[in-house]
Image (cartoon, rainbow, N blue to C red):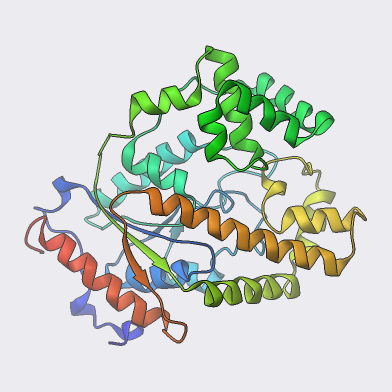
Length: 336
């Protein structure tokens, strides 16, 4: 089935009986699994838009390093929830959830199926299962914790979290500064552990009827794709993009600039190591990141996994996804 030329009569929208069920389709998986291109093909068939769940694509001006969809892809299928804030601005999961729900409700009003795609597991979890009611962020406290990390090192900050909330610390990578800071911030504001708030909440809200599909590849193939994508990014302007962001005043210690690629390039531009070491670290850290993504998603209940073969086209994978979506929608009511 060639999905690049699906006849107009095969395009589908939600029926009146399906919309009250609030169906949402979500495509997740590790970086470089091929989610974005598959999503474009699926969106064409369902006459819908792609709602991105990527914590790095929310930043304006960070295009090459976050693998944002190409202009021709955005022209064919609108992509939402990207380019929301400047790199120096703060953005959090609660903001994402509110904006995503607004986009989903807009699509329902137009009779279209919401299609959420991305690799930021926390965004997907809070969208589908609710947001833990921990205290709101305190900018001054967060800034103080960031300065502490700069002055005393990430390991010292992480050690503090181990002391006050070992359960949360065990789930976080010591270098995941934003989440470490958030957990410490919650403890300092409330005197209670983040893990206690999460246990009480239980992420038990179910505002949508969700079909969650995971795309994965065998590890050698995934790692080859990661390395090929990094080579492409470096050859197509990532270094210049990073240099321009720094020249515009984006702090190296900001959450945006600590993302994969930008951090390694910025350290190279600062003279901390040569180009070869920058590439080595970039590829190594991205491989490690993909493993952490899979660790997260394997713990999430209800994901239906598809293994993508190395020679498989995005159109072929999309055909499998579309079949699953059709069966899912059929359980909610007859299609219009």
